[in-house]
Length: 359
Image: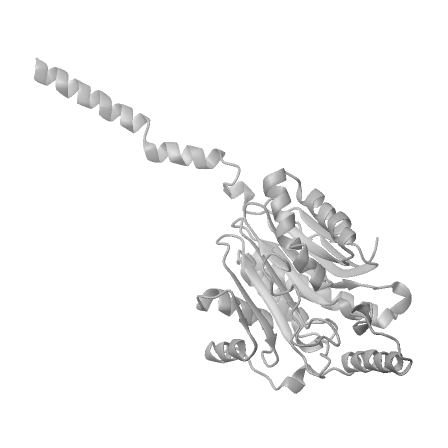
């Protein structure tokens, strides 16, 4: 009798376990968790790009030049969007969209990079994976055709986050990235901008005027960066930024673009951010990470956090520029405190937006 009773108890336990299968319970928990990406949500994806912020006024823009900017912004955003639409990763979308902007002489990155005081071009870039919080960055390179490709290679094929100068270029060669003669980056209009600043400096010296730090750079020379943020069908965020820095920069100056947390930041729990503006202030304000932190620790929405950092905190410091950002629900923000910012966005509904001036 005891054996029969014991067998009945075991059968009851087995049936109970089947009914309350731990694996089934875990799946139920996952399905009700807000971070879970169900099949219904797999269609949610979006992408935002920027091509720099600054004194961008319609009065200073010819119709032909404006059309050229809009065409290139659209080409870049559609390139990234097509990757997301096909189920590709946010990292791939960010990298390929930035490649388009780096290859265009219109923007201060890659081919269109500005000149240093010595008459050279020095590039900085970074990329970050919101899923793993892994990141890669390069600074002060002069022969890598697409710096954002180097940043990603550093993230994925090295134990480091940031490489600089000759070492970064040696790593790029070892990774088989495209290397070009530094003359590839020469553009006439960027060189003329450097000459103009130098002429103004000499004029000030001739008049025995003390030159301040700010006088080394014209208003427009402080800005100019390209960047991209994206959310893919798998719910993963990514961001990237690439720049030629400031016109007339000296002493190996490095801005915010290659600095994780200042120029670039991604976290699947909050958002992905890419910055553009006067880098020194973005570094001091840890702008990209600050937006994420306000969302994570204070419960602000992406729009609220971006507005607080760019319009209040950054302005109070005397900094100028802007950011693009996207959160894990696909909400997009393009916030700036300058007269203009080259920007574009596109969502899963294929709604395209392109902007240049303040609206």
